[in-house]
Amino acid sequence: MTRIIFHIDVNNAFLSWTAVNLLENGYKKDIRKIPAVIAGDEKLRHGIVLAKSPVAKKYGIVTAETLYSARKKCKWIEVFPPNHTIYMEQSKKLYNYLATYTPDIEQYSVDECFLDMTGTTLLYGTDYVKLAHKMKDEIKEKFGFTVNVGIGENKLCAKMASDFEKPDKVHTLFMNEIETKMWPLPVSDLFMLGRSSARKLESLGIRTIGDLAKCPKQLLVKHFKKQGEYFLEASRGIDNSKVVSKREKNKCISISKTLPYDYTKKEELEKILFDEVESVTFELRRKKLYAKTVAITYRNFLFKNYSHQMTIDNPTSSTNDIYNLVITLFERSWKEDPIRNIGVRLADLTSERKEQMSIFDNTEKVETNKMEEVMDDIISRFGRDSVRFASKSKITRR
Image (cartoon, rainbow, N blue to C red; front, top):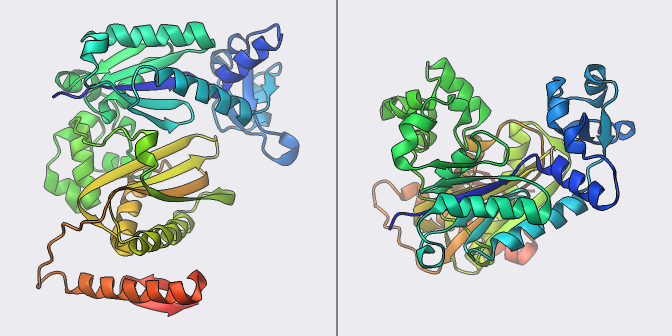
């Protein structure tokens, strides 16, 4: 059965939700129609533009610039502080509304959701574009803000489609539309392609998604290793990842950390990810479980939440295996923006291990597994601070 996935994306969420709240509380102006920005407190050195109105954009104001710079472009710009309580309330309203259409809904970030509409034909028919317009218009009427709806045969295509022309639009990206709608786009527009990867691809003469789709697999693997295979599949519209609903997320092991300041250095973030992987894999082995799906979640300095996952053929509980997958996901997707919160989630848990080991090429893996068992035993007896992995084959005392 062909899958049908919707991606719902709130247009200019922080500014729109602030505008709705102000109007509901008697404010006379719709800040979406005047030069306005959402920004932090300049006195606390948080005076960064988090969101801007379409009018402010016309003055050349961009997200992440300082208020000082924004005011030089438009002296009469109106500034409003972020209010995350309001954002969470509006996000919850949207989620609850979308859940009336299907229980198979994944909250991708505070202002984005994926819906798996596969198998809803008896309820809504087969005209998915008409249904998407109905959803979009109802959201505007009920809640006062607009959304884009992208429709595709998988999450990647649905997400790419919703990022086409904005605001208040419905777009499709079916497999037979890939060449005409997606291939002409810059390679940097490809979903989950990080900024550094985009720069490297461009240096190789790969400038559009179409260029990438036609690139020899060997060349991509040479320069990007395992990531190269993903880039090639994504550029051709191939994505088998599932819509992970709340009920599925409850069947997982996860950890996240709010950072003391905005982290920008890859090495620091990789260290935190390793610590988190250590923690969740210890718990996994303690429960004698194996994970088939590995995910990273992070929140950037604009308070946007992101989640990226990978499903593997052979479930694992290995710290090293899972850490390598986490780093692959991180390198694949991070846009090099400052990060405030980062976490790891393991899902599709099973008590059965399907991996078959070869006596020739898995000697190191057997040794690593034994090492992890020893480490787990020490941690159980003396606490997590007593040992720590130093590399794939060493344990060091703290």
